[in-house]
Image (cartoon, rainbow, N blue to C red; front, side):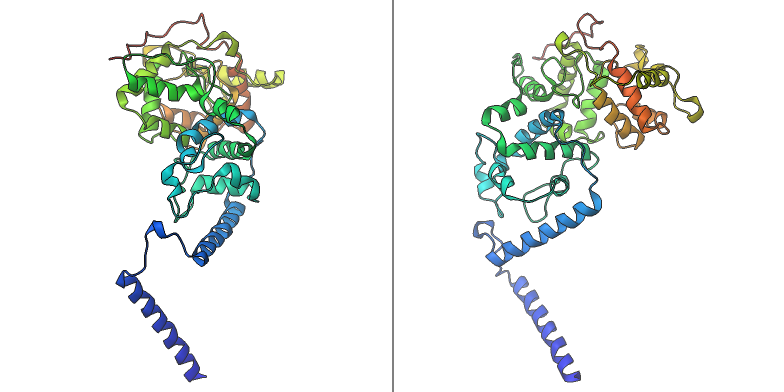
Amino acid sequence: MILTLRRAVLAVVVLAAGGLLFAWSGLFNVAASTGHWPVTAWFLHWVMQNSVGTYAMLTVESPPDLDDPALLPAAAGHYATGCAYCHAAPGEPQGDVANAMTPPPPRLVDWLPHTDWSDKELHRIVEHGVKYSGMPAWPSLLRPDEVWGMVAFLRRLPEMDPATYRTLAYGEGETPPTSANPDFDAALADCARCHGVDGAGRSTVIPVIGGQKQPYLAATLRAYAEGHRASGIMQLAATKTTAPVLDLLAAHYAAARPAAASAPAGEGAPDPEMLAQGEAIATRGVPNRGVPACLACHGVDRPEAAHVPHIEGQHAAYLDRQLHLFREEERGGSPYWKVMAVAVHEIEDDEIAAVAAWFARQPRFGAPGTAAAEPAPEAGG
């Protein structure tokens, strides 16, 4: 028994030493052009499947309503910018570089119908990426809600025709104007995919920014670009251009006025008691828990409040999500984000929903006929 055990240990040591010697020699070919051996490809994929399944079960919360069409425009725009080159899209092929990767990324319109990944497993892959491949993690790990939007989009992707995909990913209708500054024009076209040229937003989870305060918009865009405000979608968009162009975008949207047709922002018809609760919080706060009145800051338009955004007429779904992010201290942005984190620290979920619904039904700050913002500077400057 002792002799057999010694031989086994010796064999393990010899194999380990041989493996290290082979690795040190440099003879193992790591070139991507050679691909993986079939057994290596199978083993890596098997490990990945097991890992995704385990971590999805342990760490991913139950999905929201993935049939909500409001989730699709922002996810489609991000897919077109950051995903389609590798994974293709309806009417759009994979890029040449993607085809030369090891392992090659799947063409999702063909691959997704033949997989049995659950919604939670797709969320895990999109949010955290896959090691030893070209699949990166979501740019911000503090926004699982954005990842759920991408999962909702991926579920619909295989059945989309090219026209439907392009409408979702690039918008339709109004064409962005041109100026003497091609960098600004390109950035505005990129923003308009989700926000529209007038800043009305293409869904209830995309904020209205037309008519918003210019200092607030400029500070927000810089916060995204510098990574101080979490959003996988906006961080990617804001880092594609320069700080002067971000300032021009802020000026453009501050001076914009969303079309009247897009002006009620509230979703559905909340219970009157819910709206009354929201109005009470907005006007008086919740004094016994230290929650101040929202209108103490958001109802004023003094110069010192330039970084306090207008929220009247904003989409309720967007406000609801931002208040949750503030409460969990997972949202940066303007210089006053810490004030908001303290202000809503003790607010309850039902109170967040109520105050979001009430503000959504107030006259929109960017609607035609409201006070005009400062004129936008010339984009050619």
